[in-house]
Amino acid sequence: MTQMALVIDLNVCVGCHACVTSCKEWNTSGESGSLADLNPYDADPSGTFFNRVQSFEAGSFPNAETIHFPKSCLHCEDPPCVPVCPTGASYKRKEDGLVLVDFDRCIGCKYCAWACPYGARELDEGRKEMTKCTLCVDRIHDQNLSERDRQPACVLACPTSARLFGDIHDPESVVSKAIEERGGYQLMPEWNTRPANHYLPRVPTEAASCGSGSCSCKTSGSVADPAQSPESLDAQLERGELHLASMATRI
Image 1 (cartoon, rainbow, N blue to C red):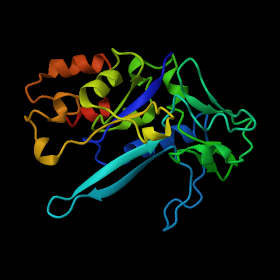
Image 2: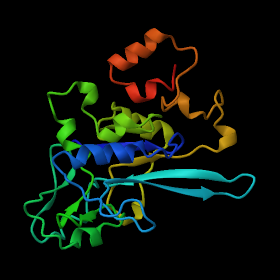
Image 3: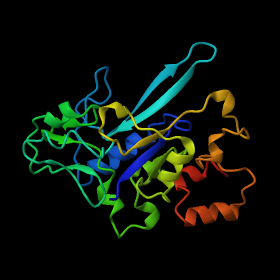
């Protein structure tokens, strides 16, 4: 069974929120829109976002670090939000493993939000319907788009290529290889929900300097080898392995 998912590299996420804004832009005008922003900027903001980035400090001076942790629906392989839905609005698709919401059936009871241990569902106060990340289902299967563009908006927007997308059940996919090579892990596996999305762990700053054995650019492809030629970059772009948004950071 296919299981599409995101793999997020915490070692190169810079907390720029490009994934947040691109997600909001695409989905508020797509099949899931419109997404309410009732009070987006004040001290107590409210609004609907499928993707959020939480930032916090770890360690103590002088070795403190800021960690940016993007979080959205994890598209669990055993999603607890599905069986509690009284109308069948929450469901998991067999063809791609995505957990989605049928807005025509949703009554806004919030049962799915209570069942989700990750806090990944948000009730849109304007529509009174439960919303969540769809992995841009209206993009990834759109045959009118080029193969490179059939990815979630957050993946295409990431300037550091911290977000990877693919089938985690395919051992040859970029996400499966990243999980295997970098020790990708699931969020809160003790809940037995089998989250499809994975995270690639951070490497300590002193061990992550470019050229070291644990440098993330050697395994994740997040930073190009300075010796790469323009031709090799063009080849990566042609194969869909290099995002236009991140290309400027590599040459």
